[in-house]
Image (tube, rainbow, N blue to C red; front, top):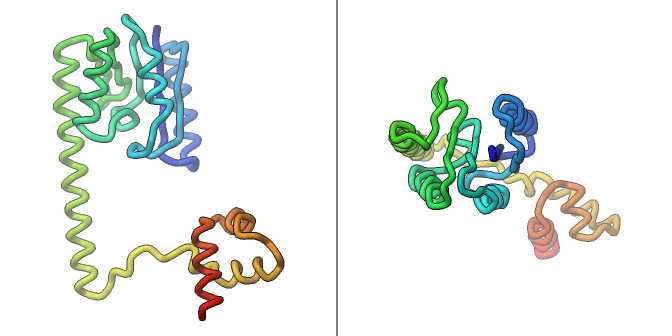
Length: 189
């Protein structure tokens, strides 16, 4: 059985998720597709469900490597789990071609490319940290603008209108804890 897994990080990437599902179903004929919109570092229930679902002789398909694993060690643990079950992994877009772990060369390519991708990510994060340190030293880095604090007056106004913390949070798109924090600062200030 061909089983697909599709993932995007955010709900704003709905078109990307639909494209993955289309590619998995159309080009390969996947009969079962697990899909989710969650960060690669978050709990991925659909990935777990897909890994639980596949059986010996099945092939797990993904459109790209970054849709499946967050690091080399994570990828290798997924591949190891699949191999224990007798399941192959096939990546449709692997640098312009396809890779399939049913062959030794496919497994080797997958491992090498995963290590390179992780290396690139770590180098990028190191450069980012260095850039932030330089910007902070120059007094130019302020960090992310707090979203809830920008809505303080709206929180106070909605509370005055008799709306509860949960309703305020839902209406303004902020956390309930932020609502309580803002209201406490206004009552103490």
